[in-house]
Length: 463
Image 1 (cartoon, rainbow, N blue to C red):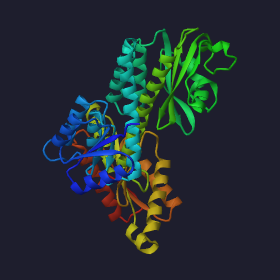
Image 2: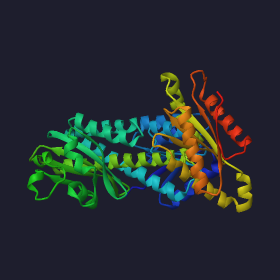
Image 3: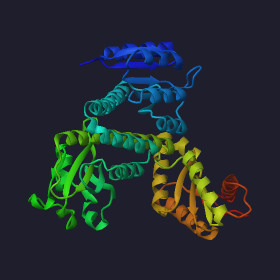
Image 4: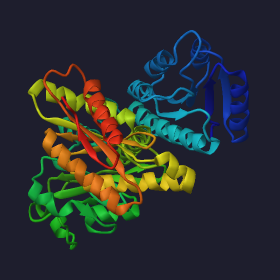
């Protein structure tokens, strides 16, 4: 088998050498470049499987290098390695076609997994390309591959991703038979969850909202990892859950795979008696791998986003998430004159608590307080860790009086269930407020008065 070739583009000579030495030891052929122009020149000379690309390059910016690589060598996987990670740069890199996004310094074991996945993705795409060259009748399949890839690149949101993929498959008329409908299942906690469906009634799929391994056709495909084809569901002797309409249809279930594991299923319903040849099965298998890798990457992005927007200690949304959500809610309140209230709170005498019990006990207290706050809040409300021992609660469509009552409930719950008390300040949106910072400041001022008035109390903004 041909040795895979990795190109490392980074302006740090020590890092380039160390990375090249490690990857050669792992069996890869390596090339190195100090900047984007040098890297692009190497790509013109030699075939490269994967590029490891730093964003902070001298001269040509890393994102521009990425765009040129994906334009001229679209099947070459590009893994971003950066020491200055942000959500915006992650989104920009992904939108330009980056296979994945990693923060330096990274674990070699994790990087090796990303490289292997990128090579697997490249192999899948090249298999499609080679098949297109060999067989002219594969043009429709490659057109669909392109459109699925376009759909995949449009969004990082999982629900939007699977819906777009289904729409492409139904609308492109790729299959040599009539496609009556389809659905995508995702593997979650060992079970299958119906994530999206098209051209099928909710009644048909109502029993399929969640499936266990081995249950029905889809559950069997999850267990075996193989495509399951039924020309006539009703004639199989099995008991499909999607009754009664689906028993009059053919059924094709394609596992969506990434790194040799099933991450979801593509379920297609066809006319009775539909024949599926070996070439089409191979195409469906490859298509399942392509979509599976996209699903896996989407999950990886969601994990990165969750970590970046949540406090690692308490699990609550952090201040960055607060900025995003408050901007939306304040804008809606100002535009439509809706109600919006904030409650700022912090733990009374928290420094003394830490000095007496230790910082580990303080961390446990913060975690416990977060649990109490979350339990007492409505599903439509938000709790954020504002910083240190301060928390901020946001109550959309809630006026000052109701928010004050909620704050008092929080105060009583914390006092009853922990060995500390909290002070709280309440403020509500008014039409003359110029910006969201004014609303936060009003809540903070009310909190300050609560502390001045003796702590363990709720104070409302004076206007």
